[in-house]
Length: 263
Image 1 (cartoon, rainbow, N blue to C red):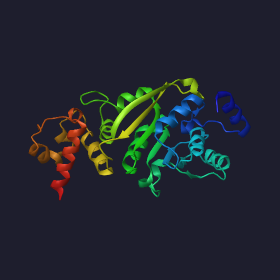
Image 2 (cartoon, rainbow, N blue to C red; image 1 turned 90 degrees about the vertical axis):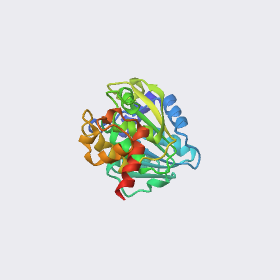
Image 3 (cartoon, rainbow, N blue to C red; image 1 turned 90 degrees about the horizontal axis):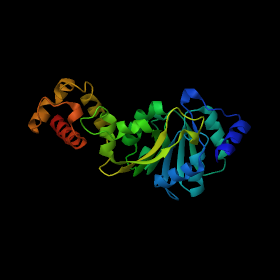
Image 4 (tube, helix red, strand yellow; image 1 turned 135 degrees about the horizontal axis):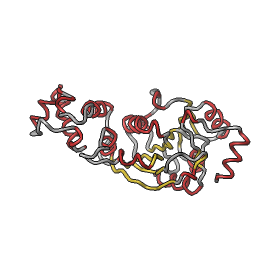
């Protein structure tokens, strides 16, 4: 649906965007088609969509014949999606994805999300650690947030999210999405990014490890996380190194050595 169709649809079904959920409904046909194409999904692909909203992307995946599961936190939108896709091959779950544990996470090959900006980091983290068979993830994010997602060691933006994304695989900024592509327009420009699996799937244990390392990012890592002192010294890494200066590859190596030392 284009902007006019979406406005008409919202009015007809009396579905107003809820600011409490950070809702901005995507209404740009070209962007919608681009995201579906970038997702990597095809007929029969097992895909999870977080925050489907009115179902603009969902509809395209259903038409394509993908095996889609849509997770929507808003009960109003969940009821709307059930009516809209009645009789279609789709699984609709009404839940806060961050609290969703009992689902077939390991079966999904692809993930797509138009993420509310205020929960971007935890949703991306959970998807990366939960979806152990995922080949590619496609996200709509605030353009300014990309500097955190793809930050390099030594930069101010470098942190657990950048480490996790790099350890997952290839990060690519695909599209810039203008504010006019949404109803209502968000306060900032958005962008579509993809994460293509290359290195592997970061585990929840690895996420916890990285967050401990960055607990006091400007202090020596051995002060933030004393338990790894012996590990990094045995690897020839200087004791006074800070978390913000360690590369994702080195974090993987430290984690492997640390786990082995705990056995």
